[in-house]
Image (tube, rainbow, N blue to C red; front, side, top):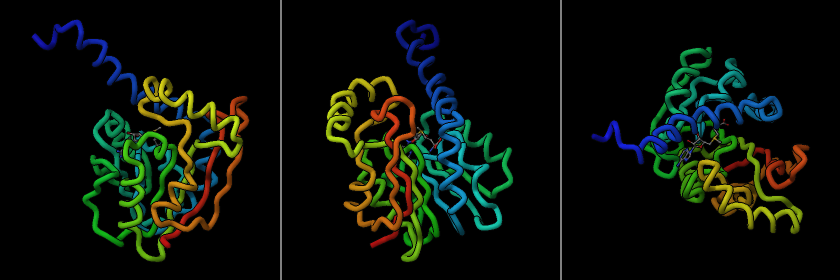
Length: 215
Ligand SMILES: C[S@@+](CC[C@H](N)C(=O)[O-])C[C@H]1O[C@@H](n2cnc3c(N)ncnc32)[C@H](O)[C@@H]1O
């Protein structure tokens, strides 16, 4: 009965298409160039929040990284993530759960990596609280996110457009202020670069990249 349900079919196709769409967009060359700037800085035991399809794996420096644990809920992306783990040299595993409530021990990770995920994690404050909990006292959080523009005019449009954008873009917010979220979660920003990717729209192109430490 369920198999032939006409109203369920569009939902199933959406569930299949979404992971592939995210993989394609996140794999664009302009995005890959941003990963290359930040991911090689990770070291030791790494937890990657919002592992997605594993697009960061080729950018880890395998001589500095012992092991990567990718955390992602079961929304279709982990299937692609597993394939990436099988293909790449760096030692990695997938933990299928939400970043808001990780089963990982406290103060156990040298690095937390988060790229293009703080925009879509529903309770981003809880996820950053968890990131802080699992980091060793001298660990580092490496981030690269699109987010809130420093221009009040652009930010106003990001606020206006976020509700419809979220509905079509897998829960992605255009207007999250990465720096403020990190500071509010108890991080100090050791490095924080805010720049425009040059996509022709600062609404989506404003980038926040940097390194945070536990305060
Ligand atoms: C735009 S994709 C980015 C994927 C990957 N980080 C990258 O850079 O290609 C956003 C990711 O956040 C993940 N995500 C959404 N909610 C999450 C949550 N509560 N905890 C962890 N990851 C989540 C999604 O499943 C998706 O993999």
